[in-house]
Length: 355
Image (cartoon, rainbow, N blue to C red):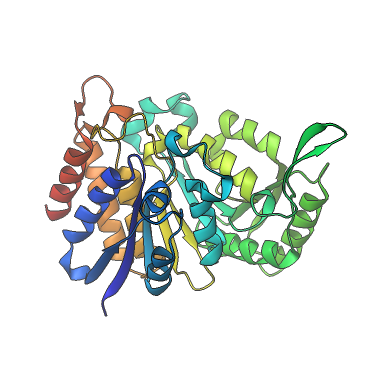
Protein backbone atom coordinates (compact mmCIF):
# COMPACT_ATOMS: atom_id res chain seq x y z
CA UNK A 1 0.00 0.00 0.00
CA UNK A 2 1.09 3.56 -0.71
CA UNK A 3 2.03 5.52 2.39
CA UNK A 4 0.66 9.06 2.22
CA UNK A 5 2.68 11.74 3.99
CA UNK A 6 1.66 15.37 4.42
CA UNK A 7 4.83 17.49 4.25
CA UNK A 8 4.58 20.82 6.09
CA UNK A 9 7.91 22.69 5.82
CA UNK A 10 6.73 25.77 7.75
CA UNK A 11 8.98 28.77 8.37
CA UNK A 12 12.61 29.78 8.86
CA UNK A 13 14.91 26.81 8.40
CA UNK A 14 11.89 24.51 8.10
CA UNK A 15 11.95 24.22 4.28
CA UNK A 16 15.72 23.58 4.28
CA UNK A 17 15.72 20.76 6.82
CA UNK A 18 12.51 19.14 5.57
CA UNK A 19 13.97 19.04 2.05
CA UNK A 20 16.80 16.86 3.37
CA UNK A 21 14.44 14.43 5.11
CA UNK A 22 12.37 14.21 1.93
CA UNK A 23 15.59 13.54 -0.01
CA UNK A 24 16.38 10.62 2.31
CA UNK A 25 12.90 9.13 2.01
CA UNK A 26 12.99 9.47 -1.78
CA UNK A 27 16.26 7.53 -1.79
CA UNK A 28 14.27 4.54 -0.48
CA UNK A 29 11.79 3.77 -3.29
CA UNK A 30 10.88 0.48 -1.66
CA UNK A 31 8.96 2.47 0.97
CA UNK A 32 6.27 3.29 -1.62
CA UNK A 33 5.71 6.78 -0.23
CA UNK A 34 3.56 9.52 -1.71
CA UNK A 35 4.24 13.04 -0.38
CA UNK A 36 2.20 16.21 -0.73
CA UNK A 37 3.26 19.62 0.59
CA UNK A 38 1.17 22.30 2.31
CA UNK A 39 1.68 25.52 4.26
CA UNK A 40 1.55 25.94 8.04
CA UNK A 41 2.61 28.60 10.54
CA UNK A 42 3.75 31.90 9.11
CA UNK A 43 3.69 30.37 5.63
CA UNK A 44 0.05 29.47 6.21
CA UNK A 45 -0.75 33.01 7.26
CA UNK A 46 1.07 34.41 4.24
CA UNK A 47 -0.80 32.20 1.79
CA UNK A 48 -4.23 31.92 3.39
CA UNK A 49 -4.42 34.37 6.29
CA UNK A 50 -4.47 31.45 8.75
CA UNK A 51 -1.53 29.66 10.49
CA UNK A 52 -3.42 26.40 9.90
CA UNK A 53 -5.27 26.76 6.60
CA UNK A 54 -8.27 24.50 6.11
CA UNK A 55 -6.59 22.87 3.10
CA UNK A 56 -3.57 21.98 5.23
CA UNK A 57 -5.72 20.48 7.96
CA UNK A 58 -7.69 18.49 5.37
CA UNK A 59 -4.46 17.13 3.89
CA UNK A 60 -3.08 16.23 7.33
CA UNK A 61 -6.28 14.39 8.26
CA UNK A 62 -6.22 12.39 5.05
CA UNK A 63 -2.53 11.49 5.32
CA UNK A 64 -1.11 8.50 7.18
CA UNK A 65 1.55 10.70 8.78
CA UNK A 66 2.74 14.30 8.86
CA UNK A 67 6.34 15.50 8.45
CA UNK A 68 6.78 19.00 9.87
CA UNK A 69 9.66 21.48 9.83
CA UNK A 70 9.28 24.42 12.20
CA UNK A 71 7.09 27.49 12.57
CA UNK A 72 7.54 31.09 13.63
CA UNK A 73 9.50 34.23 12.88
CA UNK A 74 9.87 37.77 14.25
CA UNK A 75 7.82 39.24 11.40
CA UNK A 76 4.73 37.58 12.87
CA UNK A 77 5.19 38.69 16.48
CA UNK A 78 2.76 41.61 16.24
CA UNK A 79 -0.11 39.61 14.76
CA UNK A 80 -3.15 38.97 16.92
CA UNK A 81 -2.42 35.88 19.00
CA UNK A 82 -4.83 33.53 17.11
CA UNK A 83 -3.00 34.35 13.87
CA UNK A 84 0.54 33.73 15.08
CA UNK A 85 2.43 30.73 13.62
CA UNK A 86 2.63 28.89 16.93
CA UNK A 87 -1.17 28.80 17.18
CA UNK A 88 -1.24 26.78 13.98
CA UNK A 89 1.10 24.22 15.52
CA UNK A 90 -0.96 23.95 18.70
CA UNK A 91 -4.16 23.64 16.68
CA UNK A 92 -2.96 20.84 14.43
CA UNK A 93 -1.85 18.86 17.48
CA UNK A 94 -5.29 19.31 19.00
CA UNK A 95 -7.22 18.70 15.77
CA UNK A 96 -5.36 15.45 15.12
CA UNK A 97 -5.55 14.44 18.80
CA UNK A 98 -1.78 13.98 18.98
CA UNK A 99 -1.64 13.57 22.74
CA UNK A 100 1.61 11.62 23.18
CA UNK A 101 4.88 13.34 22.29
CA UNK A 102 7.95 11.10 22.23
CA UNK A 103 11.28 12.89 22.50
CA UNK A 104 14.38 10.68 22.62
CA UNK A 105 17.60 12.17 23.98
CA UNK A 106 20.38 9.98 22.64
CA UNK A 107 24.07 10.85 22.70
CA UNK A 108 26.04 9.53 19.75
CA UNK A 109 29.56 8.60 20.91
CA UNK A 110 31.09 10.85 18.25
CA UNK A 111 29.32 13.89 19.75
CA UNK A 112 30.38 13.42 23.37
CA UNK A 113 32.69 16.43 23.11
CA UNK A 114 29.80 18.58 21.83
CA UNK A 115 27.71 17.99 24.94
CA UNK A 116 27.60 20.74 27.55
CA UNK A 117 28.50 18.14 30.21
CA UNK A 118 31.64 16.08 30.77
CA UNK A 119 31.84 12.97 28.54
CA UNK A 120 31.89 10.64 31.54
CA UNK A 121 28.57 12.10 32.74
CA UNK A 122 26.72 11.75 29.43
CA UNK A 123 28.49 8.89 27.64
CA UNK A 124 25.91 6.24 26.79
CA UNK A 125 22.97 8.59 27.40
CA UNK A 126 19.66 7.20 26.09
CA UNK A 127 16.49 8.76 27.52
CA UNK A 128 12.94 8.77 26.17
CA UNK A 129 10.80 11.69 27.34
CA UNK A 130 7.05 11.12 26.92
CA UNK A 131 5.28 14.49 27.03
CA UNK A 132 1.50 14.90 27.15
CA UNK A 133 0.78 17.25 24.26
CA UNK A 134 -2.85 18.35 24.05
CA UNK A 135 -3.69 19.45 27.59
CA UNK A 136 -2.20 21.43 30.46
CA UNK A 137 -1.64 25.17 30.64
CA UNK A 138 -1.15 25.52 26.88
CA UNK A 139 -4.78 24.63 26.21
CA UNK A 140 -6.57 25.23 29.52
CA UNK A 141 -9.45 27.67 29.79
CA UNK A 142 -9.97 30.37 30.94
CA UNK A 143 -6.95 32.25 29.66
CA UNK A 144 -6.23 35.81 28.66
CA UNK A 145 -5.11 39.28 29.65
CA UNK A 146 -7.54 41.65 31.33
CA UNK A 147 -7.60 44.69 33.60
CA UNK A 148 -8.21 44.06 37.30
CA UNK A 149 -8.07 46.76 39.94
CA UNK A 150 -6.59 49.17 37.44
CA UNK A 151 -3.74 46.98 36.17
CA UNK A 152 -3.30 44.33 33.51
CA UNK A 153 -3.37 40.71 34.66
CA UNK A 154 -2.37 37.71 32.54
CA UNK A 155 -3.81 34.31 33.43
CA UNK A 156 -3.72 30.73 32.18
CA UNK A 157 -5.27 27.55 33.52
CA UNK A 158 -3.33 24.37 34.23
CA UNK A 159 -5.84 21.56 33.92
CA UNK A 160 -5.86 17.79 33.33
CA UNK A 161 -8.68 15.27 33.25
CA UNK A 162 -7.75 11.87 34.63
CA UNK A 163 -8.49 10.27 31.24
CA UNK A 164 -5.82 12.51 29.66
CA UNK A 165 -3.26 11.46 32.25
CA UNK A 166 -4.21 7.80 32.03
CA UNK A 167 -3.76 7.50 28.26
CA UNK A 168 -0.34 9.16 28.14
CA UNK A 169 0.78 7.16 31.18
CA UNK A 170 -0.09 3.94 29.34
CA UNK A 171 1.99 5.04 26.36
CA UNK A 172 4.94 5.69 28.69
CA UNK A 173 4.57 2.38 30.53
CA UNK A 174 4.35 0.50 27.22
CA UNK A 175 7.56 2.17 26.03
CA UNK A 176 9.27 1.42 29.35
CA UNK A 177 8.35 -2.26 28.95
CA UNK A 178 10.29 -2.30 25.67
CA UNK A 179 13.31 -0.53 27.16
CA UNK A 180 14.82 -0.72 30.64
CA UNK A 181 11.52 -1.12 32.53
CA UNK A 182 12.12 2.09 34.48
CA UNK A 183 9.69 5.01 34.42
CA UNK A 184 10.00 8.34 36.22
CA UNK A 185 6.84 10.44 36.48
CA UNK A 186 7.64 14.15 36.76
CA UNK A 187 5.21 16.66 38.31
CA UNK A 188 4.92 19.25 41.08
CA UNK A 189 2.45 17.52 43.39
CA UNK A 190 3.70 19.30 46.48
CA UNK A 191 2.17 22.62 45.37
CA UNK A 192 -0.16 21.92 42.41
CA UNK A 193 -3.48 20.08 42.68
CA UNK A 194 -3.27 19.33 38.98
CA UNK A 195 0.01 17.49 39.62
CA UNK A 196 -1.47 15.75 42.64
CA UNK A 197 -4.11 14.22 40.38
CA UNK A 198 -1.41 13.37 37.81
CA UNK A 199 0.56 11.41 40.40
CA UNK A 200 -2.52 9.56 41.67
CA UNK A 201 -3.54 8.45 38.19
CA UNK A 202 -0.02 7.34 37.23
CA UNK A 203 0.07 5.22 40.39
CA UNK A 204 -3.25 3.65 39.43
CA UNK A 205 -2.00 2.81 35.94
CA UNK A 206 1.21 1.34 37.38
CA UNK A 207 -0.79 -1.54 38.87
CA UNK A 208 -1.16 -2.91 35.32
CA UNK A 209 2.61 -2.82 34.82
CA UNK A 210 4.15 -4.61 37.84
CA UNK A 211 7.41 -5.22 35.95
CA UNK A 212 8.09 -1.49 35.54
CA UNK A 213 9.96 0.28 38.33
CA UNK A 214 8.04 3.53 38.86
CA UNK A 215 9.53 6.58 40.55
CA UNK A 216 8.24 10.13 41.07
CA UNK A 217 10.18 13.37 40.92
CA UNK A 218 9.29 17.06 41.26
CA UNK A 219 10.05 18.96 38.09
CA UNK A 220 12.62 21.28 39.67
CA UNK A 221 14.55 18.30 41.00
CA UNK A 222 14.24 16.54 37.63
CA UNK A 223 15.81 19.55 35.91
CA UNK A 224 18.72 19.40 38.35
CA UNK A 225 19.11 15.62 38.06
CA UNK A 226 19.22 15.81 34.25
CA UNK A 227 22.37 17.85 34.63
CA UNK A 228 23.80 16.07 37.66
CA UNK A 229 23.20 12.43 36.74
CA UNK A 230 21.22 12.07 33.50
CA UNK A 231 21.89 8.37 33.02
CA UNK A 232 19.70 7.53 36.01
CA UNK A 233 16.69 8.04 33.70
CA UNK A 234 15.31 5.61 31.15
CA UNK A 235 11.77 6.83 30.38
CA UNK A 236 10.29 10.07 31.74
CA UNK A 237 6.56 10.88 31.55
CA UNK A 238 5.32 14.37 32.28
CA UNK A 239 2.81 17.06 31.38
CA UNK A 240 2.87 19.48 28.50
CA UNK A 241 4.72 22.48 29.92
CA UNK A 242 7.15 20.48 32.06
CA UNK A 243 7.91 18.20 29.10
CA UNK A 244 8.50 21.17 26.83
CA UNK A 245 11.15 22.54 29.17
CA UNK A 246 12.84 19.28 30.20
CA UNK A 247 13.15 17.91 26.66
CA UNK A 248 14.86 21.10 25.48
CA UNK A 249 17.22 20.84 28.44
CA UNK A 250 17.93 17.20 27.58
CA UNK A 251 18.74 18.21 24.01
CA UNK A 252 21.93 19.93 25.12
CA UNK A 253 23.10 16.76 26.83
CA UNK A 254 23.15 15.13 23.40
CA UNK A 255 25.38 17.78 21.83
CA UNK A 256 22.91 19.95 19.95
CA UNK A 257 19.20 20.67 19.78
CA UNK A 258 19.67 20.00 16.07
CA UNK A 259 20.07 16.28 16.81
CA UNK A 260 16.77 15.53 18.51
CA UNK A 261 13.73 14.20 16.64
CA UNK A 262 10.22 13.79 17.98
CA UNK A 263 6.98 11.94 17.33
CA UNK A 264 3.50 13.11 18.30
CA UNK A 265 1.01 10.24 18.23
CA UNK A 266 -2.73 9.68 18.47
CA UNK A 267 -4.33 6.56 19.92
CA UNK A 268 -3.81 4.68 16.62
CA UNK A 269 -0.16 5.69 16.16
CA UNK A 270 -0.93 8.13 13.39
CA UNK A 271 1.73 10.74 13.99
CA UNK A 272 3.27 14.08 13.26
CA UNK A 273 7.06 14.01 13.13
CA UNK A 274 9.28 17.03 13.64
CA UNK A 275 12.61 18.16 15.09
CA UNK A 276 12.22 19.63 18.57
CA UNK A 277 14.02 22.86 17.65
CA UNK A 278 12.43 26.05 16.37
CA UNK A 279 12.55 27.90 13.07
CA UNK A 280 15.93 29.62 13.78
CA UNK A 281 15.17 32.70 11.65
CA UNK A 282 18.69 34.05 12.23
CA UNK A 283 20.20 31.30 10.06
CA UNK A 284 17.27 30.72 7.69
CA UNK A 285 18.23 30.68 4.03
CA UNK A 286 21.94 30.23 4.75
CA UNK A 287 21.99 26.45 4.18
CA UNK A 288 23.84 25.85 7.46
CA UNK A 289 21.11 24.31 9.66
CA UNK A 290 21.48 20.76 10.98
CA UNK A 291 18.91 18.50 9.23
CA UNK A 292 19.70 15.36 11.25
CA UNK A 293 16.87 15.83 13.77
CA UNK A 294 14.40 16.02 10.88
CA UNK A 295 15.94 13.01 9.14
CA UNK A 296 15.77 11.07 12.41
CA UNK A 297 12.15 12.18 12.78
CA UNK A 298 11.49 10.48 9.44
CA UNK A 299 13.03 7.32 10.90
CA UNK A 300 10.66 7.59 13.87
CA UNK A 301 7.77 7.91 11.41
CA UNK A 302 8.72 4.61 9.80
CA UNK A 303 9.00 2.96 13.22
CA UNK A 304 5.88 4.22 15.00
CA UNK A 305 3.29 4.91 12.30
CA UNK A 306 4.30 2.39 9.64
CA UNK A 307 5.78 -0.31 11.87
CA UNK A 308 8.85 -0.51 9.62
CA UNK A 309 11.62 -1.10 12.15
CA UNK A 310 14.12 -2.35 9.58
CA UNK A 311 14.07 0.80 7.44
CA UNK A 312 13.95 3.05 10.52
CA UNK A 313 17.18 1.42 11.64
CA UNK A 314 18.66 1.84 8.14
CA UNK A 315 18.21 5.62 8.36
CA UNK A 316 19.58 5.73 11.92
CA UNK A 317 22.57 3.63 10.86
CA UNK A 318 23.24 6.02 7.97
CA UNK A 319 23.25 8.97 10.38
CA UNK A 320 25.67 7.10 12.64
CA UNK A 321 27.92 6.35 9.66
CA UNK A 322 28.01 10.03 8.67
CA UNK A 323 28.93 11.07 12.20
CA UNK A 324 31.55 8.33 12.44
CA UNK A 325 33.05 9.68 9.21
CA UNK A 326 33.52 13.05 10.91
CA UNK A 327 30.95 14.96 8.87
CA UNK A 328 29.41 17.84 10.83
CA UNK A 329 27.15 20.84 10.41
CA UNK A 330 28.23 24.03 12.16
CA UNK A 331 26.33 23.35 15.41
CA UNK A 332 28.20 20.10 16.10
CA UNK A 333 31.51 20.97 14.45
CA UNK A 334 34.72 20.41 16.40
CA UNK A 335 38.35 20.69 15.36
CA UNK A 336 39.42 17.83 13.15
CA UNK A 337 35.98 17.17 11.65
CA UNK A 338 34.62 18.24 8.29
CA UNK A 339 32.11 21.11 8.31
CA UNK A 340 29.34 20.78 5.71
CA UNK A 341 26.17 22.63 4.75
CA UNK A 342 22.62 21.52 5.43
CA UNK A 343 22.16 20.10 1.92
CA UNK A 344 25.57 18.44 1.98
CA UNK A 345 24.65 16.69 5.22
CA UNK A 346 21.50 15.41 3.54
CA UNK A 347 23.58 14.17 0.59
CA UNK A 348 25.98 12.43 2.98
CA UNK A 349 23.14 10.56 4.72
CA UNK A 350 21.75 9.47 1.33
CA UNK A 351 25.21 8.25 0.29
CA UNK A 352 25.60 6.29 3.54
CA UNK A 353 22.12 4.85 3.08
CA UNK A 354 22.92 3.60 -0.42
CA UNK A 355 26.31 2.25 0.65
